[in-house]
Length: 228
Image (cartoon, rainbow, N blue to C red):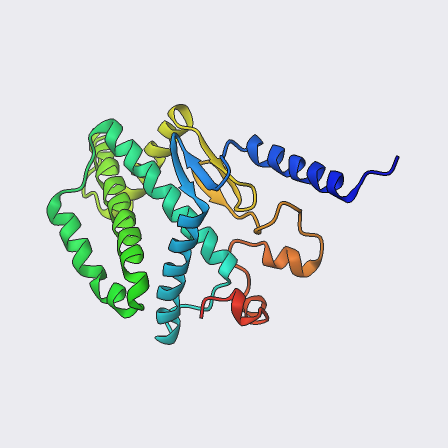
């Protein structure tokens, strides 16, 4: 007997639910870091705020136009990274000083003030978390390098050392799952997913699935799919 349209739709929904549940996320979550969810709605808020900031930089000629998909993946990467660094910092008692956090807040005031008011709170919180993540990794790396006898330690050498230590710890102690529409998490990094559960097949789709597609590809997108 031929299945009804309703039965077919139900089967498709069940298949999708199984696919999403297999990655460890819950409905409405873009990702989970340990027990901490990153909701899709929150991701969209952050991506929109970052997109607004990107638009200001584009007007100043300091960055190229990004696709909305790339910006969304960037936002998720920032959110995951911040949670990983916070978890590592809490586990080992590594935290930036108040002075460091205040200096970082001062340095981002101009950028936050440049975006429309409705995006400022989200952008400010996102950038604050990112600053905290980077400062935590710098301090964690400094401690690692000092233990190995390194001298003349700079942020440029400390942050990679901190990230290496963090990612090794995460691989043993923290589960990170990502909705496959947004990518996959491997070796401490979010890998681009292309925004779809299906694999890209056309040359254009393959070009667009890159973490940062070519400027010419982004330029060909309709305005609704670009940060502008």
